[in-house]
Length: 631
Ligand code: COA
Ligand code: AMP
Image (cartoon, rainbow, N blue to C red; front, side, top):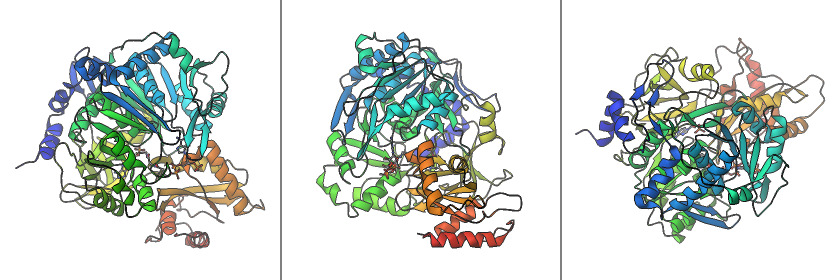
């Protein structure tokens, strides 16, 4: 007998129009589509062409109209500040409609961009949904990025408005957002017409007269704004993600395909019924926060949790269990690094026993490879299915998952199970030839990509084609390498580009190298990701100093650490750079970052046949040993 997963996956590939057309029946449309799928363009599929809808309507109003208005839509939990809040669907809809009025009154309309640079407070969600309500395109920038990164995004998205707050909170410190925002606007060539600033009690900020609008004052005067229908193919948001260079990629998400796919995932992948409490412990600045703190749970009529805390230290390693118990969470989604942090501090899981987790049914992990130790620990301590799933900012939802809502397949350690419906995942060699089961190659997805996946990069169609579609014609290149076993289980092994994954955060080593190279004493540099027992990977810099600079590793090392923090932000977690005489390269001049990483991690490595001078690699190995690698 063919199981529910196999049946759904096969149907989604053999007749995508019927499969997603049916799923789209679960979304409210103001105008039906003419075609489910238009894949006439060789570059990207367009879903639900001709259809019109409003994403905010599907997240909020639809539930109020169907009698769910009194249910909690959003629970805010902030263990550091002690703040808490609860918004019913009616309350959230009213708040969002008023903030939509604030934006619209000041000239923001359909297609205009709004940057949201906010901590994890309800106003961040309100801002996102308010943009969706009036057809404006939001671009949320993660709070851990520095002013320079924000400026790059301002210049690319060219926002009419920026919404921000006076500050964020991290354990032990208040992060002043306003100086970062002001600094970014100074640095950027493009200037927004206005900024709306939410003043938090814990620290207020100075306002710039004529530019800054006080959130609370503006809301007091605002008229609610209704939902504006937009085309299914119109952009809902832009989310910048790390590429191989310092210029981030603006991943575009459309309205129609996004709503259809995300709502479908809630029941079929996460097995969550409307009315239940769903918690994605991430940040609104990342794709997980967009898809699973904000949009999908609301499309599905769930209660979503906005947690402004950490897995440990706020106040202890029982923080997640407290939230699950207090808010009766049925399903938690987070990154493996959060579980490694909890396990480090509470190896026996003793704090779990202090809480009533009877409502808790499943744990989903993503964002980085799930190591078998963490998987086993979570399984044995929580006694619920622990599901690894693989996805990326570009796809917006799972590429591979164990679709709990369809059927729970046997779990294999190290694998996010099988391709999700809609995803035709294959492994190919560098000449795009399919590889047999068990052989490692590039993980690619046969086009068309399913609804919800990126149709393009913001203002960069050529870069989109170049980055994702040109290397393997007819396929989308994920940038990950891995293999598929005899049972069809996918194993994601490593990135094939200069992207590293630090505590579930995707970062570009190329961007860090650009910062290091700007130091006056640095002649050449390289950054690699080395293994870290908590964060999965952390960056490590290699510096070749200018001849006769007379500076030491300690001096320049500290300075470049400061520079990366200042230009990229604390989230880069760049803490160390070592000085080497020369960098090992191939004869064509390519730095052998992969081999350096293997040496630093103490893995087996072979001398690359194309190496220019093997002695250099030995010198680098010696420097690494002196600096405590492999650790
Ligand atoms: N605003 C400002 N600064 C921020 C920030 C934000 N929103 N988020 C993180 N930072 C800062 C931190 O304060 C820290 O600064 P520091 O160098 O001064 O200590 C730095 O960025 C690195 O932060 P982080 O990567 O979070 O490391 P950590 O050591 O503070 O915490 C974990 C480690 C594992 C507890 C933490 O990374 C975590 O909770 N991860 C969950 C992963 C996650 O949510 N992933 C999203 C995808 S699902
Ligand atoms: P991001 O776009 O920030 O979500 O990062 C996406 C990248 O994180 C992927 O391309 C993978 O390299 C990695 N990743 C995400 N989820 C997983 C997973 N379950 N297993 C292995 N790698 C993952």
